[in-house]
Image 1 (cartoon, rainbow, N blue to C red):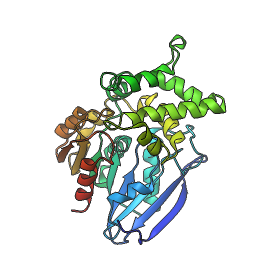
Image 2 (image 1 turned 45 degrees about the horizontal axis):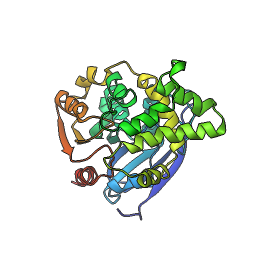
Image 3 (image 1 turned 120 degrees about the vertical axis):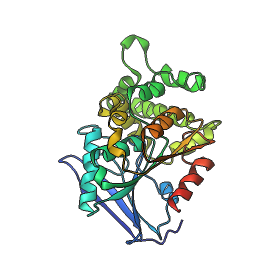
Image 4 (image 1 turned 60 degrees about the horizontal axis):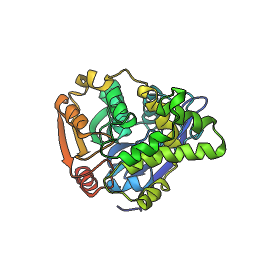
Length: 305
């Protein structure tokens, strides 16, 4: 990846409250991509740029509402999936982009698919890594014990922070502590939420590796946004994506998914692939992380074909 590429950075005011941070990197005449980060709440990072060749790609990166460098940090006010779709439209309009390729990972696949369903005429191609459909089944798998058999220790630690006598769901209790707890509690519950996710996103990850990943990005916004979105069924009707999949019949889609993905089981990617008319599915010997060699290499090859 070359680093001597043109870069434009800025903030776009998308509501009275929110400003989203964006960067446009690469060649002016390059094939144009929108990078849609995961989480929700993770933001994009310098590390995400490794997938692209900025001599031949022009890429729009942005931090979704409340995420990373967007302002206000960690705010769940006026923060729903529809708000994020509207923000993408506002950003593309501001940058005078009529049609774009979209590359999303994990939650970024959910948001990319919903954006494409609502705006099919603006999407050239979709590249989806680690498919998350945002439906009740997918959320339950992640937050209601779907990983317990494979990751008993990690699940027990995550679940064990929630008192059973309060009758609150896991995301509701964590979110309340993250937003309303003491400074120590806020930090603790944000950290524990993200520790759970990173500890199951690839097989055999060590505690040192987990620490290193957590320190790479603003984990508080990831924890707050995930609890907010997943606790509200991603602010979409159940099965919204699969029920509206016909609207994507004309959009070529490539799906890259880990065979051993514990966060987003591979059958969701297979279901999406079977329902999409123009899709190609790559199943790699990997988990959920985009840093695993099989997934990383496949994406780089696809983008550079």
